Image (cartoon, rainbow, N blue to C red; front, side, top):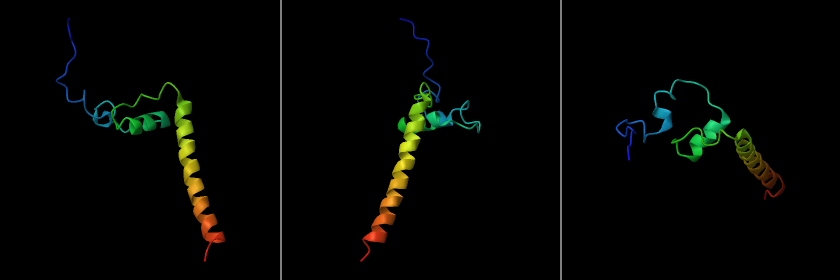
Length: 81
């Protein structure tokens, strides 16, 4: 079996954000951001096949923030001693 992979490059097992082709100050989309978050910075194209997943995760995060604020506001307003 012939293996022609180059395992000597430091970018192979390192984080994606430190690779020269990624770190050129380009803007990334939500799918790439969530993929980097879930893989610990190892892969940026994990969720690119379905951008609706990134929209759903962002919406869930915003909804959790709003509901946390609303819960605090309501409990401070109506249940204050």
